[in-house]
Image 1 (tube, rainbow over the protein chains, first blue to last red):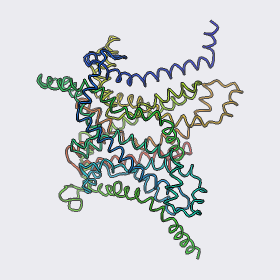
Image 2: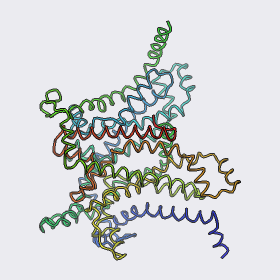
Image 3: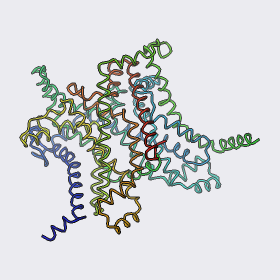
Image 4: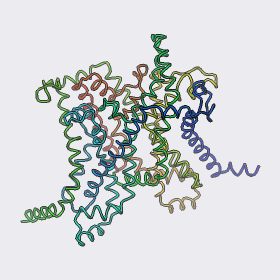
Length: 304
Length: 307
């Protein structure tokens, strides 16, 4: 009785409320993830009947087996890895040198260059002028467009610049210059080895963007052999949605529904598995590099 | 005299730093070719543009494309939906990360807190395609978890994805699920730099924990909140089009068509380039006006702003 009173009194009661709210939040964040994982290991009939709520029912690896046999997914996987690796390397080559140069003192016109970049954060040509521009370079339906577009994120560049001006003391680069280094070798041999943290942040920020990107592939690519994983993922996930729409539509014919049902059934079997297979690399990489992420967000917040 | 000395100083600076300019070159080139060059394509918004004739051969039509937009059936709908989604996001989506950070800051067990944070960042890494897939699964009328709970409580099945009125809630709530943890990092960082002397002084004065949050922690992170708020206002019309597009279907279009998805459909599906560009330009202009207004307001009220 006394302990209950103690809990209810003042700050312990407060702590109880905070703990409860946080716990509810935790459940809400975790549940959908657990649900998808469980469904991926469950018998699709049980999933369709809505029996799976938390743990897998009718444990099976059939879905994963089908995923491994599904050619499109592996084409997409290969393309996505290619776009992510090459794209991220280009991102680094464009972003880091520029961020470093802009972080140095006494560079005439650096303010102007910053404005030149920042304008593009708010003003752009828009979809169609951008599309015509890509077309004018002859980049439509090429792999190149997937790695060149978005080569520079001004936001990321500002994050890197803030890091360089805060963490690389002016004295170090000055000393390197006196010892006979020019700017290029100072950057490569002195600054880069000291900047592993920011390289990590950039690799992750850009890498995730490439891995998850969907829209530019949809706009600029026609050739199935060049599609990234997200496009194929969309196709698989869409099949059951199309069925739902058609069933809800009173004008749909029975044949139409039957056909879509058949497509949706095979999609049903694998859709949870492809979600896992496509998201897994990110989920594995991320907790190991979490400290970098947090650092990146904080560095970026110091100066907008 | 003075000016010429300054000039030689500038020249010397440029010549001694030329390598730094070379380092900027890739980024500057990219920005010129892929950000500034398309800007001149905006001209086609004022044309009866045909790809064959090009920008200089096409006929100029003044503001015709804009008039067509303002008079079109979809204009009020897409404007309303775009504003609804972003304003609703501002009202219910913006405070959640702040509240979350304040609560996380009150957790005494460091390990538990780290665990909660780790879990809360996870959804941020899920791609939009997968996110929309999960949303559709959860809301499915036949076997979705949400509808099963509704059935368990004795309610009627809800066709969430087919009803336009539901769209904004689906969009916002799933956005909070995915982004609240990630967005709270910045506030949490701001909270951890609150001067502990302030909190100790409040302790001595007998302040309760709630009072400490309200009178110390919250005011201390106001500058961060303001900056984030202004940034958010600048994007009021650039609602994440990917997610909206992927959640759309013919049934909920009245509640889900927004400016940017409309630009896509008119432009690339119907190939009406000039009209689509005009819609996009309208969007950009309104965005800039809102951003500048928000910035000016925040400067006046809180003395902090973006620029």
